[in-house]
View (spheres, rainbow, N blue to C red):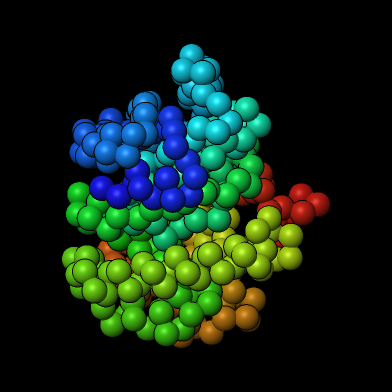
Length: 310
């Protein structure tokens, strides 16, 4: 309800171009239009089908043409309202149309709130792999309304918590302990603990990004924990079997298992990885994936150096 005022506060007076999915447009379209009308901001909406298939150069081109037809200017703004796919796609379009126009992220999924909306990583997929074409492009504003989480299925909630659990695993033991102690409350989105853990998770990611925005020092690479195997799994299963957080869950267990085998992580720590993820109802293996296909996708990982995975 406050988005119009928030945009005026940062100097954006419109028009704005909302990129979202049909179901989200049905849920929040009228509400967001009223919020803009109340502040005199003109708003237009473009919907794309749900799923990773929409995160493509073809869909981006359709949005470019739509923006051009409406004479979008550099002083206007794009709003990405949706989950991680929409955040990535809207950010990519904003980064590249007219060589860059402002983008506001309105994450409506838990995964997007704690991860995809923060940090300015924008991208589209290629058949060869995920997020291979993109840009670092920071949003002017991120607006997370926790009421939107009430429409999510339990599977989507658990997948979102996977990214937040990752933040605990890599950088905050006390946060990880809270996940172990509050599984049921978090799956039920009990307001106080949910808001607290989302805030802490967002803060961890934002701090890492501030220290290493473009992954040049190695610090930000920590945020990719579980993602090398996870992205490989997504590509190998053609983005149809797993939600992103589920793939990351399997990837973290894979990374922990490798760490244990080479002697840099204890057996007990590896078991804690698996235990917490399973308690959230997340998968820790993917028998349907073809290992050779996963390895082929991993070889195209953006973090590879001299054709080897770091």
